Image (cartoon, rainbow, N blue to C red):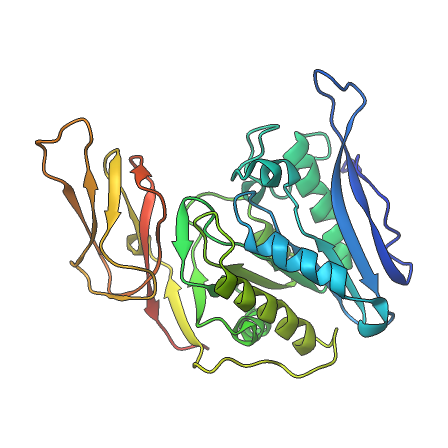
Length: 335
């Protein structure tokens, strides 16, 4: 028999109205033997209708999701909602506090920890609670990401090509409604245990993004994120209102091959030649790596292996061997 969660919530998920509370996660440390990590959670329950579960701060160096969802949580009232919206703006709260990708408490990446373990580390316990308690409540799962400190993405809604055609069609429609310039279909090239994948396995309508990055909260990107959240809420019947459509046509692109993800072959300082959103041809130089210990050594050129759009690039100069420095996505038919 699977072990039950050790996490306790202040929120009664069946009670109507607006509630603000915490997920209380057991956390014993050197100066607090009986301590709890308290992760804020907000629920707005307006009655009958679907349930959306919305996360920010899966990675702690991605600011757009937490800010957009905190603003939404403060603004929304139960009278406006047809159904139930559960918001956790900072899922990996220790990492958000530090502006770090992984948790400083256990060194784990929340987005590689699913489905988690009830008696695991802090990160694993939170992933287990999400998997066993929150996912079963939800019809729609929203997980807002950006590039964090290390990457910059051209703002896009993202999704996997899941095996279930009907599920994929629902996810694609929500991604298109989000209203970023690109819908980006991607592959998991950096491990397993992702929150969206676990939700997809459970048949949920999953909405994910890559909203900018570089560790900042860019005003233009934040506007896209806030509009996207609202558009999906309206599309899914949780809010009344008109969907705000962008002036541009939303395009669908994909990076599903290993060659689309370019990694650095040596430690050094990475110089990008082009910015996100620009077209790239196979064989074109997208950047170069400089070697600070050897001023006499020529930089090493980094070449694109596929043709498409530069959807993501390295944000910081200091780069290690194996770091992703460029991601190229190709235009595809939406369906």
